[in-house]
Image 1: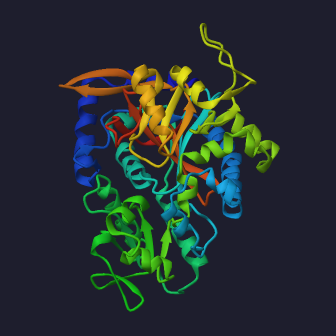
Image 2: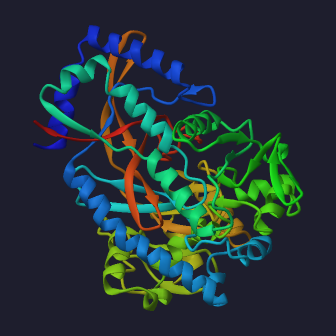
Image 3: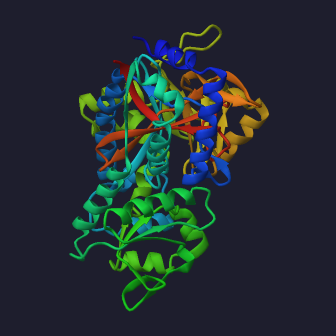
Length: 462
């Protein structure tokens, strides 16, 4: 049964009364459970994301060689300063990554940002959040909220749905890193570290409740409120031995400096931090350029090269150089550069409609220029900026959409919304579970005001 038919069957069950009842319960449960991004409810639609077993199998199978390639690129960067230079690390980042964190995996938790179409025939990965991937707890609790909704009572009669929980994998990643770190045999005392005012603070509370419920003492802590004294990192009277780092490293250094209590404690080996400073290497958007650049093909196996060609859009660090052009795209009026070597900067200027510019280390949709939505003069200025600051250029990918129901002033509407598929990565090796974000904008990002988050289920007819 095609996914679109399953979606249509769900929508057919949404009578006016059922939609209103479902919306009321959804709103009440989000208030009760703190499911807010800042002050905005996480979910604004009445249907979860459905993935077919085929889609999810493709996601799990095809991301494995990509993750293997990222690991090889990471190891090459540690061993070779020439390759590491391609990632665009700043001097203070070079200083921090020089220290071994005590365990081998730079990103025990991560998230891939991809676009997957409804028949699983195309999967494109556009970013790797290898530093502070949000939403595993949000996704799990939204799943718990959606399953008992009135509309699901009707839908579950004919369709089986399987949730994709992720919080347990985050806990496993933290504990595995802590055991490998090996400085203590005591049960870790966990601090979820981030600024108190961040809009994702409500998720930190969900994680703290989950970790505490499983026997791991946990607090949330602002980096400005901790002390490092007598060889211990302290928040009040709580001795922190394991940091679940949600604060961005760049913001930590900018606000608190290299001599902050957190940085000193981590560098002294007084506390284990996940993800460690070395996560910055793969978190850079240039990591996709390292994988897709023809100069680095020798680093990867044949299967990894196949996966890169199939699933990583053409990406390059913006600089004055010659490089291989993107694959051919047969559209009327477009120059075909396939197989050619091109001057990169003139190519970027000439091919605005098919390209995206991205700052190398930003988040929340900042520092992104969609060429097809950017006027030519603004695009030229962006390219000039990209030659003086670290930027990558990436080929445009097809963005899928699906219909989603929403209640507006008591009336049910079904609108097409574009959506991404952002699977969670654990141990740098496999994906399990997925975030889905919806938007009416080409830029799919909740931080940037990009709409709604929904839980993700595997679905098939009974």
